[in-house]
Amino acid sequence: MTRLRIAEIFGPTIQGEGALIGEPTVFIRAGGCDYRCSWCDSMHAVDSAFRDTWAPMEPAQVWEQVRDLSGGVPLTVSISGGNPAIQDFAPVIAMGKAEGYRFACETQGSVARPWFADLDMLVLSPKPPSSDQVVDWDAFEACVQAGRGAGQTVIKIVIFDDRDYQWAQDAAARHPELPLYLQPGNPEVDPDVPVAAQDVADRLLWLVEKVTADRWFRPRVLPQLHVMLWGNLRGV
Amino acid sequence: MTRLRIAEIFGPTIQGEGALIGEPTVFIRAGGCDYRCSWCDSMHAVDSAFRDTWAPMEPAQVWEQVRDLSGGVPLTVSISGGNPAIQDFAPVIAMGKAEGYRFACETQGSVARPWFADLDMLVLSPKPPSSDQVVDWDAFEACVQAGRGAGQTVIKIVIFDDRDYQWAQDAAARHPELPLYLQPGNPEVDPDVPVAAQDVADRLLWLVEKVTADRWFRPRVLPQLHVMLWGNLRGV
Image 1 (cartoon, each protein chain N blue to C red):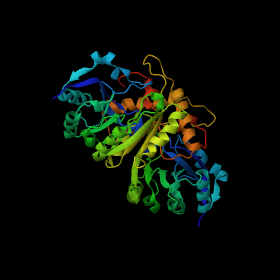
Image 2 (tube, chains in turn purple, cyan):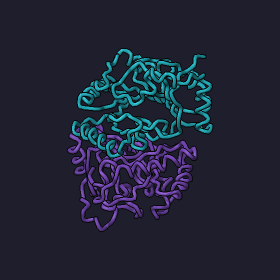
Image 3 (cartoon, rainbow over the protein chains, first blue to last red):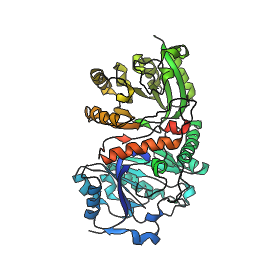
Image 4 (tube, helix red, strand yellow):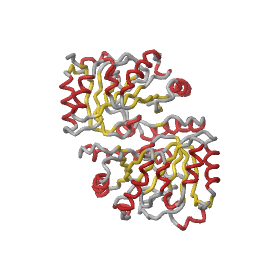
């Protein structure tokens, strides 16, 4: 089997954001990304300059590490990145599901994969204008289609400013049938700079006030709990 | 129809805790409670000393106020308290559902009501030892049964200390089929005392470390976002 490029495997901790917020989770962070978001908080899993730190691993090695970290007790495994969809995680998912583990995947929705249908939760996060990326909506639609067999597909959008917020309303309107999560952006991405929980709270408040003032009651609005708890520290 | 005793109706804001965390919500806080939890954060809706502040309202008046606050745009309505189950919210729920609103109810599970079956979300919060209350498990079972027709029933347990944590494991084991949410307790309940978001984060971290160390992967572990955002201020 093809080896996977893995930036880090860590946990168990709780999922800090989105539909599975609070859920005990082991994270597999894949190395490599087809995007270069201006505010990326995981450049160590994105930029080729870090490529030497991405371990080439057989799927069975990846799976063994997840099993070790969780003591063989089934839980939710979140495959993130980078963009994990540029690699083939089908073998890892098959190994884990055979032992009762559940799988979530977070991707921007630029590359569709058949293994999306094997997931318990597919989180599609189209990137707003502040990222300086341009969404390919045909590719995004292909991801939604590929996820039809998944337990659930949701949309999560990060919001940094008013322009992102307007964009999110249009983007979400493409799929009124999918649960929607909004998350205030985190402008501080240096792991060495501490983040004040109060700053996370203040950014959440800004977004809560926007949706309630507009009576836009569809999205759930959630912070990044891990940033509250650990700032931008890696591996938690 | 019998009048309802209502402590406050407020929103829209986001649900700060539990299964619907982040969900835009209007809250109906019922006045009156059969419990007296040592750390109650809503004594203004519990203690008879506040009874004069509970408005006697016809169900239609309650409903009109919810509709006004939400501008007639359907959203989730959370009925809390006090213990809302000591009153009859069936008429309010019927009025709201006819207009496309969704209903959640938060109760300790001491009084079962047929209208639990009309809810989209029934949150049962049995109180741990630190509350100085004693759970009547027969009454709790009756609540679980009454909620069988609801969209979803979940258990939420507040944890202040190690004893509560042990108790939560036993309590949750009674219903392995129900989603489980754990929430660190908030020892500061004075609305005039500001709460540091960092303190909320620290208490969450304590609980996250307990469940992950024990490999107890069933519960979701979540903070009270509203306490992060507004401290103990009422009406938000």
